[in-house]
Length: 273
Image (cartoon, rainbow, N blue to C red; front, side):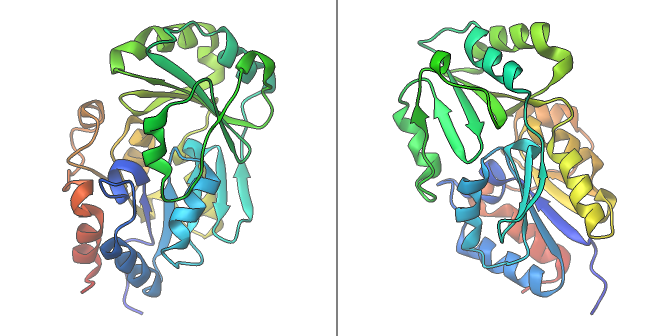
């Protein structure tokens, strides 16, 4: 088999590999299958939860794809085998959910715990992100809830500015115990200290006998910054968070996710027709 430019491709999902409807396009599916047939490993790294992503990716039909979910808090292969897990300490998770002050008309609190998604109020527009998988939130009173198996706690704001006081509070009170990032400008996320896509990916590619420097990665959010800076090549989407473009000014920018730009780029790089 001819030598490939990279051993593996790593891609974020929303705003990167998925199209404008938060779905995986046929052109992208065909590209990933052809790469897999060439012996290239496929890693999908996302802020989404595992049951959500598993459904999206089962359509691709690449049996040995690896999924890094909740920004790195969990790693599974497509067969469902757990490869990596790192939860927030229970009492910290519970206290972030309940003690963080926020404007209840403009900010909503969520958690991914095990295979479930919890939220403090009904938000109809969140459903569009998950129409493909059917993965859906449960509305709970967090004061009567628990902190068990928490992969991440996240706050969604109507505007990026709404999240600034939340970020300030969380950094002040738990800064040295958490990994804090943004998956989109309107979604502030917190995982256990040291949890990010890059750290989990580094462990998982090591199991395959190589390192992140042997991989090409694609992303669009601040939760991709470590992964894009540590990969052999890290490509930014044209539609990326402006803060990501500022953080990685020397990384190549490719096209827009709505045009399935990752698939086009990979076809050219790996010589797929």
